[in-house]
Each structure stands twice: as structure tokens, then as C-alpha cells.
Length: 395
Ligand code: AMP
Image (tube, rainbow, N blue to C red; front, side, top):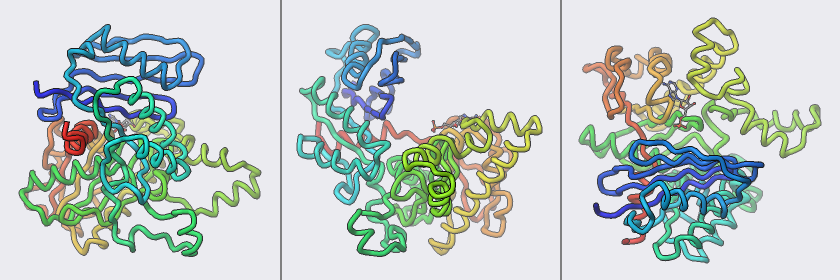
């Protein structure tokens, strides 16, 4: 084995991790620690295809990550034998400071922490995980890989809000995007699959969070997430695009506080807000049983997606490839068909059999004569983070 990278995605209430070989992509072990800060925590550690579950007493990030490292020693692979070359940390917001992955020292951690006001729901949890991991694993390099980095050089026309410019500058308000590690990984894979580096492509990352990107010749020229991951597509629990005046209305007429509105728009809206369920499988099941709210939610979801595909084709002055990725994008053939069926005028023609065939491999699902190639490419953010981590740390 060429050694491994431990990839850590530390959120406010959970720590997701994967130990993998950055060359082959083989996953040695993975897991999820949940319910940080709640009365009891829960850890799931998977090794050799076997899941081990355990309840924990109340944990903070330090106790949580200590429990994860203890699980390695107890359930395998023991840390001393795991060949860990480096630790890669997912960080949501890199602001204007970080346009690529960075080796972590105390100064870099402070600078990431200082960006927390731009991503109050994400960066504090990321930073807490980084601090603890550097303490508990002090002998290997740690690297931060930013969700925003792939979009750091968006054209100004795409990155700028038409907000009074002094105010925007003072508060660093612009479109930073997110999910960039996935959009870069998938668009690179499409380029390789189609053997072209001049593609005008759209990547639709449809998971619990969802975002679209327009990529020309490997460079992102637009993306749907903005200052925060709230903008853009309809998501599991987020509204996506909405008139900002809804916020004033909720404040003035509804009397809601800012934190309440933040919670409403980020955690209680989207598919969940429309149907009570954030999981697309449950929404589909309800719609299949004739539930009108679920049908409307699917229509809103598909309508928004189709608008983005059309607008990005216009932004790029043409379109060569559309790719679906992440939980919904990789698995829900109906959404793919519903979104793209009316877009024959753009040269998009799906192959129904290819679209509905079950596979976990990257694949083309457009008809042979389709002017635009449509693909499904499973994303692998952990592998992308592991590879960036090795590149930057030289470990
Ligand atoms: P991710 O954030 O990429 O892990 O994706 C999570 C989302 O993928 C959840 O909303 C799941 O409902 C959705 N998902 C997973 N499998 C399927 C499936 N077979 N059909 C529709 N959605 C799915």
C-alpha cells in the first residue's frame, strides 16, 4: 500500500471521515460521528465492509474525534499500522483568501476561523475539527481543501451581486459558490471520458445540498450557490433562490428573528418544507401514491433545475455535456428525464434505456445522435480531497 490519507469533514454536529488510498481510491475505513453537543453521541465505524455502531456519552469535537481514533485502534486498522501520510480537511468557505488547498499551520487555521462570519453554519465546525485533529495527530501534515476554491476565479460578472458596491466590499459580499471539490472532480472526469479539454459543460450536483455549475475548458464560469450554500437549486432542506424581500416580510410581518429565519430557510424548507421529507426517495414514494404536495415539490425542483440548465447554456453560448452527480443525480432516473425531456431544442436527447439502467459506474445516458452528451458520474469528494492533500503536503 502506498499509504493512506485520513479525510475529515467536521461539521457543527457531526464528523464524517474516510481513510483511503489516494492512488487507488480504495477505502480502508470510514465512519460518521453524530450528535455532537447533544445529550448522547453516536458513532458508526465501517471497516472491511462491516459496520460497527456504538452510543457514546455527550461529546464535543475533542471527545468525538478521540472516540473516532479509539475506534480505529479497537476495530481496525490500528492507527500505528494505518500508514497515514496526511490528514485532509474539508472546509466550506475559503473566502477571497484561499483559491486552492493550503497546508495548515496555526496562522492558516486562524485565517480560516476569521472567515466564519461568511459561513456561520459551516466554518466553525470545520475549524473545531481541524484544531482537534492537529492536536491528536501532530506528526502528519494537515491540509484544508475548500469548497469555494474551484469558483475562486469566477468571472466578475458571475461573482458580483448588484448590491451597492461600498457595502458589498465592506462586508466581502460576493458569490463564492460551494461544492467546488465535487464540481471540479466531476467536470475533470467528463473531460477525460470524452477526451476533450474544450468542453462547455454543466454539472448538476444533486445531493441533500444541491448546486449547478457551468464549466468551460475546465474553468468554472458560473455556479448556483452564492455567498453561502443557500442560493440556487431547491435542496433537501434549503429554499435555494428566493426574493430576498421574503426575509424582510418574515421579519416585519411575521416578527421572526434573524436566527429563526436563517434556520427556516436553511433547515426547514426545500423538499422538507414542501412535503415534510428531505429525502428524495420518500418524496418520490409520496408522489407515486398521489400526494399533491409531493408532486408539486418535484415540479418545483425540476423547474428550477431546468431554468439553470437553460441559463448556463446561454451563459456559455452553447453546450456540449450535462452531467448528473451526488445522491439524487446518480440514482434518480426520473428526475433526469423530467428535467431534460423538454430540452430537445438545446440538442439534448436522452437514451431511455441507458438512463434507467442501474449502475454505479460513470456512464453516458444520452442517445447516440444527441448533440449534447448527458452523463452520470458518481462524485468522490473524499478522493479529490485526499489527492489535493497529497499534492499540497508532498507527504
Ligand atoms: P448526498 O448528499 O449526495 O449524500 O445525497 C443524499 C440524497 O440522495 C438524499 O436526499 C437521498 O434521498 C438521495 N438519494 C439517494 N438514493 C436515491 C435514490 N435511489 N433515488 C432518489 N434519491 C436518492
